[in-house]
Image (cartoon, rainbow, N blue to C red; front, side, top):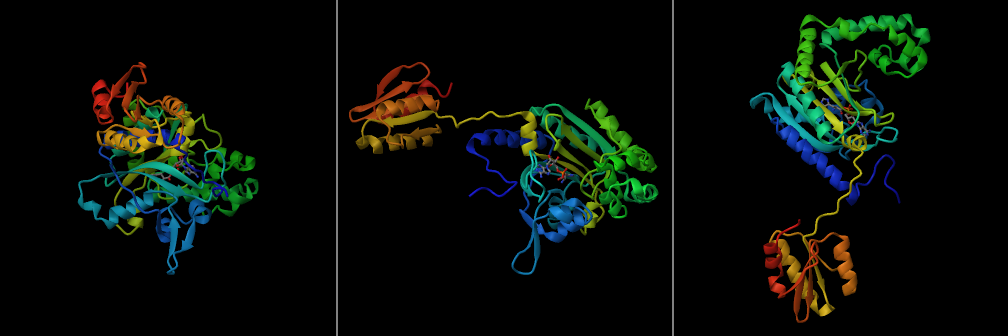
Length: 412
Ligand code: HAM
C-alpha cells in the first residue's frame, strides 16, 4: 500500500528541518507580537465558498468536500485565512486591542494535480493581522515573511507586489477589462473566454499565447486605483524601501483567492520549478464583513513549508543527540541498565539503552555510530563509564554513573 497521490510521509530524517521552520516562525512572528492559533482541520463548506470566493479554482474544483453523516457539508481546509477570520468573529476578538495578530502552522488540502512542490496535503506557516488598515501593517507583515525566508536560507528569492484597490474601483476596472476582453474574444483561449464574466482578471494568469498577446496591452488595475488606495500603496512601498526590502511592482500579479483588497504580494524562488511561489498574501478588508462581522480590515500571508525547504536546499538530517548510551554485559544486567537509563532521563540527560541483543562489541560500535557522548557498560561486578570524546574509561558503581557523567560535562 502506498500513501494517497499527492501526499507524503515526513520521515524522522526530515523532521529536523521542519522543526527549524517551526522555531524560526515562532521566533520571527512572536517577536512582532503574533500569537499562535490553530483552527480545526475541517470547517463548514460555506466558510470557504463565502470567504475564498465561489469563482476561484480552489472552491470550484480543489476542495475535499463531504457530508459529515448528519447532512452537513464540511470541507478540509484549503487555506487558513477564512478559518482564522471565523475564529476572530466567533471569539469576539474585536474586543481585544487591535490589530489582533495571529500565526499558524498547519496542514491544508487542495485537490490539485500533484507535481514537484505541489501536494494535496501540504503545510503552511501563516500570519494574519486583523483590525488595522495602516499601511505599516502591510509593510511589517511583508518584512516578517522576508525575514523568515532569510533565516531559513531560502535562496534566489524575488518579491512582487501590487495593489488591487477597493472593491468599488475594482468593479469599475472589471467593466473596462471585460469590455476589452470581449473586443478581443477571438484571440483568447477557450478557458479564458468562458470565464470573461466570472473572473476576467484570471486572463492575466493564462499561458495561452494568443491570450498572453492580448493581455500585454490590457488595461491595468494599478492605473485605475482611486486616490486613497493609490496613497495606501505608496505608503506601503515607502515603508518597504525604508526596510530595504527589494521588490518589483507587478501590475499583473493575480492571486488565486477572491478576498484580497489593496496590497497583494508574492515571494517566488528561482530555485523552484513551475511551482515557484514560496509564500504570498495581502490585505483582505472585506473578508470579515463577508463572514458576517462588522467591517474590519485585515492583512496576512502564508508560506508553503515544503517549498521553503526545497528552495533552501535543506537536506540536513539530524538524529537526536544521545548523552548516554547504556550497554550491559549479559542479560542478567538488563534490569540494572534499564534503571540507569531511567535515572539519566530523570536527571535531564538524553539516554538510550541497548534493546537489540547486540554483543558487547556490537553495543560499543552502536554507541559510537549514534554519536553518544558517554557509554556506560553495566557488568555483574560493577560498571564502567567511557568518555566517547577522549576514550577515557573509569570504573563506577551503576548507581554513580549518572552523577559522574553530569559532573564531567555534557555533550561537547
Ligand atoms: P496561497 O497563495 O494559496 O495563499 O498559498 C500560500 C502558499 O502555500 C503558496 O505560496 C505555496 O508556497 C503554498 N501552497 C499552496 N498550495 C500548495 C500545494 N498544493 N502544495 C504545496 N504548497 C502549496 C493562501 O493560502 C492565503 N491564505 C495566504 C494569505 C494569508 N493571504 C492572506 N493571509
